[in-house]
Length: 346
Image (cartoon, rainbow, N blue to C red; front, side):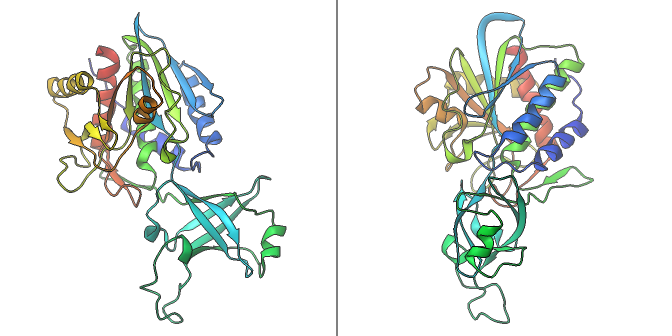
């Protein structure tokens, strides 16, 4: 039975996660934030050697063990080199759409714990100076970080403690509108993490628990392809909760929960996908059954690692993925409901 879902709680968790920079591999604070919420909800929480957070939720039956997965790591950048004029060249973490980053503010995290601010810019940043300001490619070779410090040489930058390999995080620019839209970078996949936590809260408030013991994995390397590789040991099936794609001939919108039948790694488990579709139909959820053409998930990484586990994928419909993303509270609530139906009935 579906219970009341606190939409303000969903928004609060999204805003909390967005306030913590967490490009792939730099997720400790975000994982600890999630661990605090899980503990408040009464569940055991641990951090794996790789840095993944694992929430253990006790079920009513022991005949089966299931898992959920979402990732808290985001796209980002890393210091590649420091130029003689003090400009900072970068390399991508994951697959950000670089033209969308031209002019974005960012933070550089040094290994000594210092944080510096800057701006991501084209190397032809001014219309009054550069004839190719609008035509120069926006790629790693033609963009740089303008540091908000008085630096005139590479030595000046290095004196600040900035070095090759430092993490660069750019602003999520999170806005929640009065009519329920959530506009932000990194809804892929912090919105899904919020949906899972909201489902756990709704079940706790209603005095409900999953049918089977459940392990919830919050991974930290999904955007670079291997986040879910260790998942699956001792489990019968795993449900990834990640963004639903919008565009071209896909049917998903910003108001739906998406159920993925196949992505770039191949088809998901036929029986699980059918079961999820039936849950959605029987409970009149707004959903879309789609194929994601250029996509991979933590479940895909798990299966490629050789785990003998059934796998499926759902998530809120999110527009403009890896750019300036947007979804709506309707999609988030539909996703929370499908998570709860899966946990209670699978």
